[in-house]
Image (tube, rainbow, N blue to C red; front, top):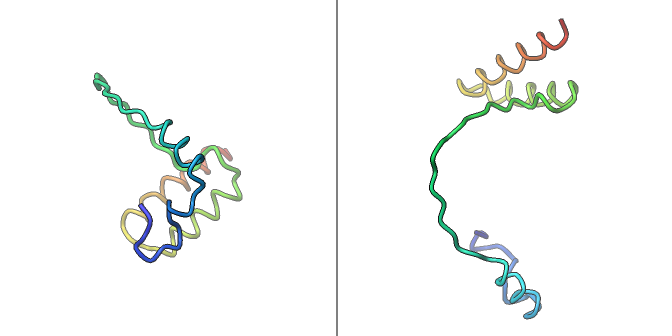
Amino acid sequence: FEDEDSKYSVDDLNTGYFEGLLKGIVAFKIEITDIEGKKKISQNHSENRQQLVIERLEKIGDEDSSEIVEKMKNNLAKKND
């Protein structure tokens, strides 16, 4: 998944290390029987960090960012009541 101009190359890895990594790749199938969604709006982070996220999202200013900002501010207001 590296960009074409990336300096990273698997050719630079130790052969034993690389072969060890390959052993950890396992294919599997899973049947999905249920899907559950959960919203995460940084509520598990400190209030200071949440404020930083809000400030950065406000700078983006698009509709999605604005909606998230509103939800985060509401969440903080409820928390501080």
